[in-house]
Length: 118
Picture 1 (cartoon, rainbow, N blue to C red):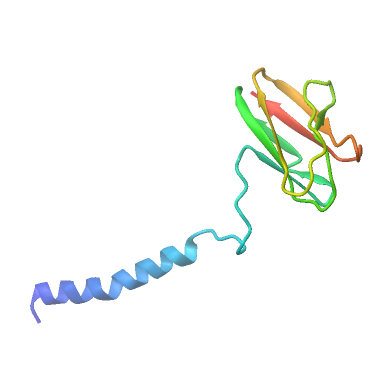
Picture 2: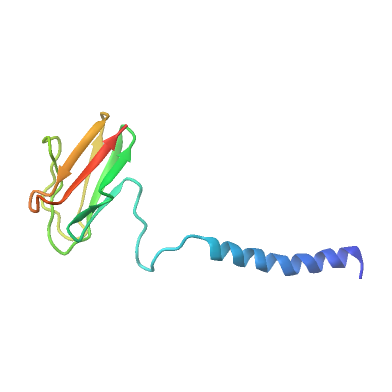
């Protein structure tokens, strides 16, 4: 066997193993479960997730209601407030100033979250 044939045989054996390892090591998510955007808060099961989100100034954060019941997004200091969001409805707000913004659901006041703008 020549060096060239030996090299070619090695590539033929190693390439499929390399591709298989890439597929195995790739992060996966459940089928049908869309990946959340880094600037998105999911409203589900009477919680805001993530409960605290840190974003840069001038970021637009979007809340998406994945719950079966309506919810609102209302800042504790009155800076922003959504209408009642039904399932799959969205509300977005752009944070133009640094600070810590607490918010809650005005229908279910025990639901709370925080946006930290840096």
